[in-house]
Length: 410
Image (tube, rainbow, N blue to C red; front, side):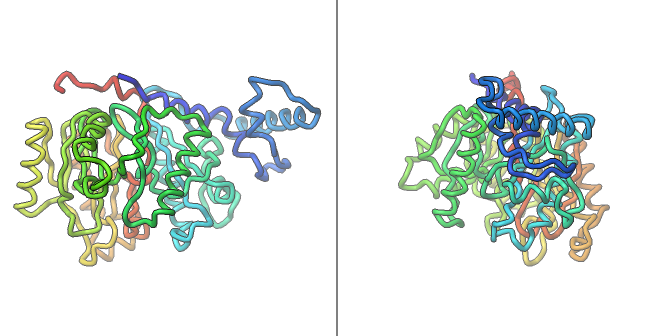
């Protein structure tokens, strides 16, 4: 079995070594130095060739000086190289993206705080284009918080829900086609091409490409090891394009054990990865469902997984208008050792709709007693969750040693 844990090491290495110089490309540095216009190429080629001119040599020296000064100012790197840390990649909205124009600074501020929370437990980087970087690194006065340079990578990825279209899988890291029906074909293709460019530019190894299969990660809930639950919408989206038997083979190759289910909350706009989450290898949390739907889900999971998966019911507090995923505690971001759980009771916008810190504490306790992982609450404001943005959709998780987590019980 091939490993794809190297991806986390690759990107993390970029973020802590060459990244400081690379993101200074075409940027004014706050400590008063001029632009380092060739820093990205200097960083990538310095080990292979010497400078061909006095100008390029000066540029290399300037970049080295800026890198040294940045390191001294920061005292230590934001990200820590440890084999047990996952790497979580976030994608900032572009300042030019009309889809998020009304919430641009709100999303940026949320991603900064989210990254700082992740940083206490796992490694994290945020991708942003050069016009958006000033809102993340402290140069823009309109955003109060900031991240250090080695937590940022200059890249143009065209949507914030990076998990949906980035390569994923538990047996292999697989790139599928991204063509969600609620997106115009050209928009979906542009988003898909943007992540492919990023993968190429940073030479991230992808184990396999299944570009004939349309699959968004919003339709997949996996335990990161050997099991995945797939929304039946995947079959609908590929109908007439890929035979069902071929779809199943491709899914088995990526996830090992797979079962197809109807989204138990398909009368809402909620995604499957909003509705359920593995909080441990064999423990799946779901919202409280009506009797018939609960029985259906239980039966479908038992057909494939037998008694290998246990269901835990968590209360869900959806508004009457059911906007977004506010109140869905099941929209969890999970890594090998940590669960980043959305909580809603600290935001005034959520108070008005009945959310409370007391309910947050009850939910957190319910999760803690059913998992071996450490639970990390993440405050999600109303303005974020009502747009359907979740901790999980924002995060592309790269694990260090997926192949090592195979269990004897499988």
